[in-house]
Length: 70
Image (cartoon, rainbow, N blue to C red; front, top):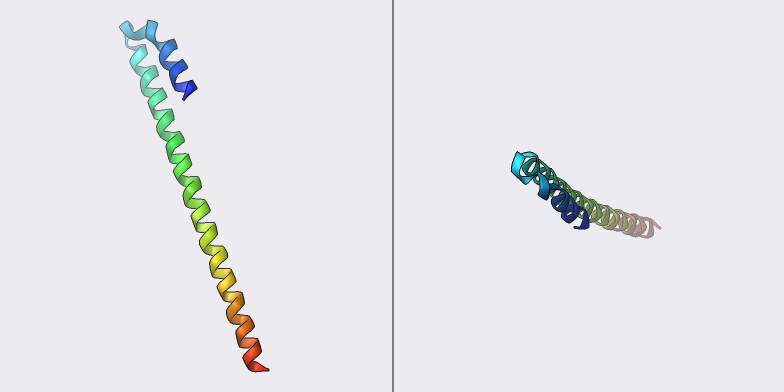
C-alpha cells in the first residue's frame, strides 16, 4: 500500500503531461497483481490441505484393510 501511495505521490507532478496517468495505471496494475498473488497463495494452501486430507484418508483405508486381512 505504501508503494502505491509513493508511486502516486511521485506521479503527481507529471499529471499534466500524460506520464502521470501511465504511472498510476502501472501502480494500479501492480496492486492487482499483488491481489492475484495473494489469491493464488490461498488457493495453493487450500489444495495442499485437501491433498493432506486425502492422504490421511487413504492411509486410514489401508490400515483398515490390513487389519481386516489379519
